[in-house]
Length: 295
Ligand code: 7UC
Ligand code: FE
Image (tube, rainbow, N blue to C red; front, side):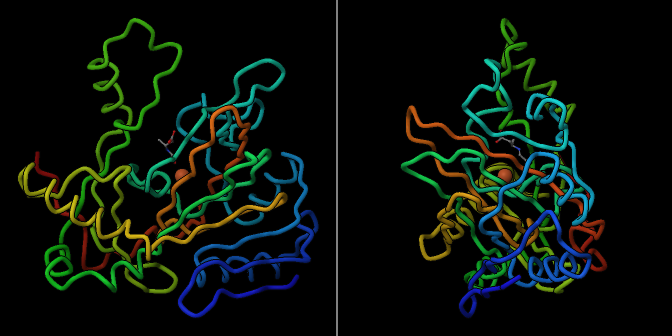
């Protein structure tokens, strides 16, 4: 296994010459060190079946089952499918997921620490995933913003991103919205999180799921969050991964936001994701237990 480290200050360690099907326990340990240190790991030249892919995820950690079964690959509940191509004449998974800045499961009390994606079919014209290093963003925040959020907690919600399913036909949006609020109730996390392995601080907010500031009025929340979202999404903060066939990406959701590219009309796209728990806390909480939510 050969490792190419990112340039100074960048993200993404590249691994070549590794046969994932015969990875050793030592190599798994190095891969995990790399993902915590460099946030993103890129495995090149892989060719795995669904079984082999899942077996690899099991060696790295504990695979997640996404809370909505319509995202599952039939007979592989751990594989989350983002696809616009039917399999055996049937729709599989959901098309066009995560095309906004977010981290996975940010709207759960226990967010997803690690994500793997393995594209099965890439569109010809645009083959990219975008990342933002939120440790870097936190360091670069203007002083007034950093002070304002130092001890703040943010509210995160999944229900605004719920995708209408066939069984929603004839239902009112307000009823669907209310039900989703019960299934995935709003959660609170500190605005600044500390990494359990590296101890580094990140801003933990995204335009995809972060909807409020605990204790602030609606107006004040919107103003502060919009200012943060604009600061975060600056061109200079964005890292673009351009895929080659055979790439598997593996990243740490604690310090990274990510966003899927849009697929040009008429082009096929199939991506298999496996979420992996490392059974470490998502963030350290000694001093900053989330405050009580106010409505
Ligand atoms: O369809 C999607 O964009 C999926 C999103 C609501 N959730 C992905 C996750 O793990 O947070
Ligand atoms: Fe995602």
